[in-house]
Length: 134
Image (cartoon, rainbow, N blue to C red; front, side):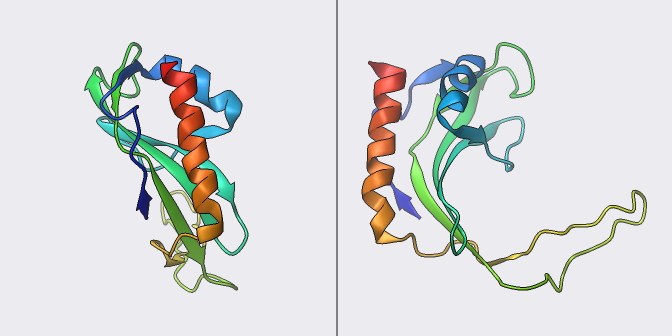
């Protein structure tokens, strides 16, 4: 993980407005969120795992799943996940819904971030600052 200092840290935005601004340029709300915090993720690459710019935010007022939620931005960071090849030996079957987890467990959820993408990550943060602050 590589943290990138940014002018957006501490800024407060409507979550709805953020989604309207960021989703069209490739950001998604990451899967690891709850009612008090979450992440916007920008996938940089997906060869040999996944490399993301992750932009965390924390609820300032309201709840993330409710209308009118306001969030405070935190320090963006670059994150890499590397996945094992082949089948997942630890997939599980849910007994109630008969659903199964077909996704592989990360080989290294905090893999070293490839140096070749660090400059791109920094430029994405600058783009984010321009979009949200200028």
